[in-house]
Length: 330
Image (cartoon, one colour):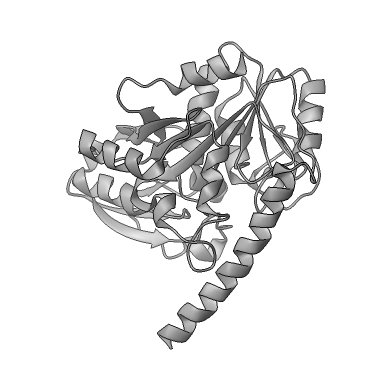
């Protein structure tokens, strides 16, 4: 049975390879047209399906570039219950614009956030609205737009060059797609990440002369936050808590909280889960910890002792991807 499954997956992966290979070649040779813009467009994406840390990386870019630019984040709004172009407003939520865009809108009041499946149209509308820098969220495979700077993220625990095409693995396209990136960022590196680890990865990637590689890690806040209060994680040492997640991979978060001495009772849901009343009835009376993304959807239920744990992205070493981007976009 396992052999049959492998054969089926191999055949399906081969078909997927042919489709994505031809599509990319049509763009490479100009059969399908790509559009570029004078306004700086920065694309953030990955080769694999989810879980590479796009959201904290986009927020990292927002924090820096919003100081000197009128920044907008443009996403397709994955799993939103709406269509067309939407410029986020106070009447929107995760249902109308999607989880990550709603998180950006809720968190950063000095930027514009928009969703549009047709990125070219969305970019034009944002430029008309006065934006002078656009960050494309999850757009590495969106070849219709040719960004001024393209960033490819890959998770340290599941590097793209060790993966396989869907459905055998998690890759959306061939590994060779990495060549389109201006920068490759290895995300979620462990605390004990060494120079040897770094060299081994660089040897495997085989960068082009115009590419740069950077290494990053997730940085967790020391505090948990609710709608109107906060609590230090250290105050929960040796206490039982509920952890509620609707993300691709919760392992790193669980390990972090356990290392802080918390006793975890994990309620795991699928990525981008649309929470219902029935989902929360089993939550026990302990403090509930969740991610920022999940908190934007859970807070409407007015759950007692519901807290979220903010995260941010930190570049390791002395490398400065921000200077590299600024140099490239002119």
